[in-house]
Length: 161
Image (cartoon, rainbow, N blue to C red; front, side, top):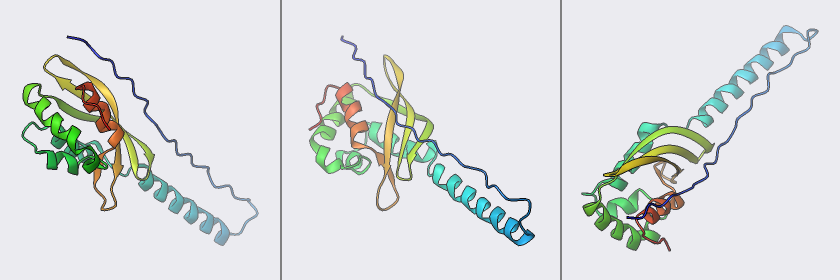
């Protein structure tokens, strides 16, 4: 059996907050307004920096690797899944003979609609962590990015179109 190594680059985003500066000669009203604006900016940034956690991302991963899931189920948890229907149908057959699991770990924010999660992909012969990218759909669901899905499919020697 040949072992294939998959190298994937994970994108990360850094959010930097600059502290608000105030002039000591400013009046109390100005200082209060500056503090309020800084607090609002910090709250907004914190919300944008944590749009999803590992538990939410685990749901599409569970469906993707579930040998009992249908191709339609997999299509629903992959970005542009309909475009990969044939490959996802082949993957259903692969999972019947070679069960895989995925466990989502650390999540890194790329932007408001994209995150990368270190995901332990394991099978009967062991496992390895993979950075998988997820995208938020227009209806607010998180799905595997089509490139992430293709990376997994290619490990099973299924070529993505």
